[in-house]
Amino acid sequence: MAKKEKRPHHDALFKHFLTQPETAREFLSLYLPEEIQSLCDLATLKLEPGSFVDRHLRQLHSDVLYSVETVQGPGYIYCLIEHQSTPDPLMAWRLMYYAMSAMAAHLKKGHTELPLVAPLLFYHGEVRPYPYSNRWLDCFTLPEQAARLYRQAFPLVDVSVLSDEEILTHKGVALME
Image (cartoon, rainbow, N blue to C red; front, side):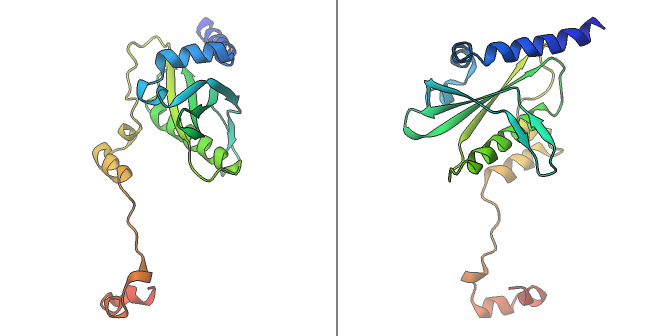
């Protein structure tokens, strides 16, 4: 019973501290990868709403979401910080889902380009070290193929550039083209 009480308490403390900009700035300067941190103006850290509604009208809640301006001019980078005390084999995918939700919310505000969303997982569970991959592509049954599929441009069938002669060689598919 004590374990169940400890987790919500720790989660509430985590959210309380990390919603304080100074604490979040210090946390991000310690744990945000240097490659991303070098793009961020941490002085512009701004707490953002971390609740999203998916297409099935389900409420999603990330623990803490901050936006920061880039050091390269106009644009934003979001830092998504999730707290976890119980390992989840699909946590990497869940973080990507939250990241995509943050991107969608950014677009709904009228922006026309996607921001970078840097997910960070804060884990303090009893199982040590964290037992699952923090790479979302490893959540797939075929992770190597998923990596190839999602790192390249999607296949594009642009019939506007096909000649009539080429379309006629496509047999039954030609009717669609």
